[in-house]
Amino acid sequence: MGMTITEKILAAHAGLDRVEAGTIVNARVDVAMGNDATAPLAIAAFREAGARKVFDRRRLVLVCDHFTPNKDIQAATNCKIMRDFAREQQIPRFYEGGEAGICHVLLPEAGLVVSGDLVVGADSHTCTYGALGAFATGVGSTDLAAVMMTGELWFRVPETVKVVLRGRPGPWVSGKDVILALIGAIGVEGANYRALEFTGEAVAHLTMADRFTVANMVVEAGAKNGVFPPDETTREYVYARGDRDPVFYESDPDASYADVLEMDVSALEPQVAFPHLPSNVRPVGRVGSIKIDQVYIGSCTNGRIEDLRTAARLLRGRKAAPGVRLIVAPATPEVYRTALAEGLLEVFLDAGAVISPPTCGPCLGGHMGILAAGEKALATTNRNFVGRMGHPKSEVYLANPAVAAATAVLGRIAHPDELKGVHRL
Image (tube, rainbow, N blue to C red):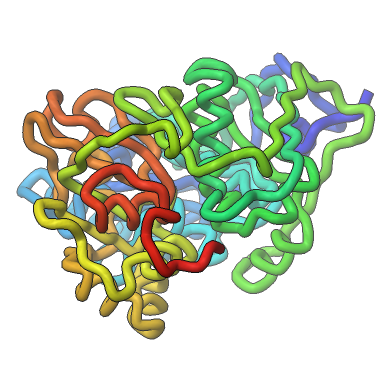
């Protein structure tokens, strides 16, 4: 019996010839990441255990992104803890200020994660890096502390579900719609502690940005990780950025899968997740008239340059509707710089948007976009739980950047085709 990509990566990092679903392994970690919401707890646990040195100062990445620029004294304290620790341990990959970006966009962009890696991060959306053909998953702060000390962590090898994507995405349909439709079909517990492996001819039509978005949100279905088999698109991305040699794994033809799911992406239209679950999904054409107070374009899910280009295409020459607060957050300094060079920031400013520095802030109700009681927001983020972006009596709807831009202009959740004079993608 052959092995899946996930099984092969875990076996290789555990020093084993093969593993099977359910096996407990102790595996070597290539990259460990913590942010300002989680790293201070890991650093405290590291010190309480009496540890003196991290396992590899170049394999630990610390990013101040959740509550930065520092929103209050606690946020400043958290970043200071990380800054002091980075200096003490001589960690070169400590990011803050103008060098910091949203961690799950920053790490692949900077080439810190490559195909075949085993990556853990004290953040649930660490699964994003599976788009590169890596095994990546979120862990708790104490687990991160253990990795910081030893460079290893134990895992139960997950079962793998093969998700076969057929067809070709239609106009205004992106990776966000693919993953929302999947979560809507299987539910928020539909892939509990399983790996979701995405295959099929439609994958060739998904950009790396699309794949990062899909992998980012597998955790919203309960998955341990998501993974795309590396192809030429992957290789081109990794070789342009990576600082280490990648390993391109593919599943064996006789690998065992717990289930096989098929989706015809050519039949999809843009999707909208209603409050208060990412699985509460319906096509934008069946949304009805829902007035929106705030539109947020950004996050580790949809803050890449491709997302900003899509939004700007629809916002060019238009204004956000009266009463709608439009916030745009480029995910990293590189995305920000590119958007500036391409004139996208001017488009957003002309549309009446507030342009945020790279930060996670609005996504998790941290800062720079908090909702009041009774307000409704449409966001390109990954979660819409009760109180996720502010007051417990606010509501968050999830959608792709094209729907977000159209919604900002019309003041209600809208299909991009409702804006006249815009050529379909």
